[in-house]
Length: 190
Image (cartoon, rainbow, N blue to C red):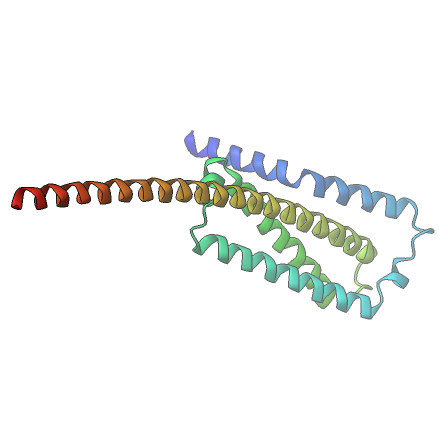
């Protein structure tokens, strides 16, 4: 029963995280088919543009992997807060689906001919838009993490400053005590 609950919770999070992308994919696909005469995607998706899209999405995948590597291998001040707020699963969902969407776009552009199925350009347009939406959500989450990390760093600096001030006051008191002990020692030795 516990496993079913975990699967349900995980699926629920995935659906929440991808709701916008699914809605946009379906809307763009339906609108594109409904207004097929107005949108000439074959002229828009030239070979040069497809090559540029492939390169851009390759870079997006590299950014996702770089962030995963950095967050996974470093202990930054915000890691604990991310785990406490359970933002890690949202971030992982967005990164994984972003990689899947970008990779799927690249694979379609690279290995599937546009003549193989009727809705090639429609699917490509929808995938491109949803991949960009996912990347924008990823950038937004990164900015939240960055902001929280800066706040954590500012708190740490304040604590260190307070601690340094306390240490300085403590050192002054110890120095004063040493001077009194030294004065008492000199008087007693005479």
